[in-house]
Image (tube, rainbow, N blue to C red):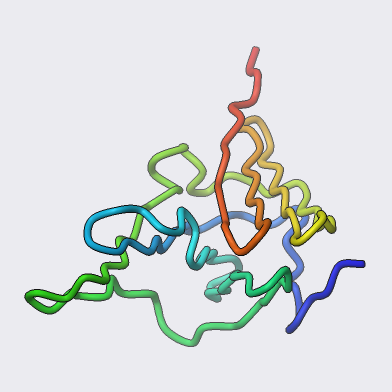
Length: 136
């Protein structure tokens, strides 16, 4: 059974204004491809993250800012603009599907005429995959 903490925003048929991904690195090595997914819809920022197989949704009051690493700090949190990377800014989200997985969950974001973004969390690791849509 899928466990969700917080309220998943209404995303179907909404414009994706921004889409960012905060990653987590330790000593320069990627530890978590998706530490937090940040999505702006209807002028509001939403956070999506996972812990021990639970899906967390949180409303964020302000636009996200990259976490600045201190000199010598082994932890870094790069902020990746997925909206630019996959041309998803201003694309319409036609659906958001949340499904349970053994030891985790998968969220699938379907973008009209653009493709599908899959965020998979399993065994405390979160990965991201984009499947480009076929356009005519």
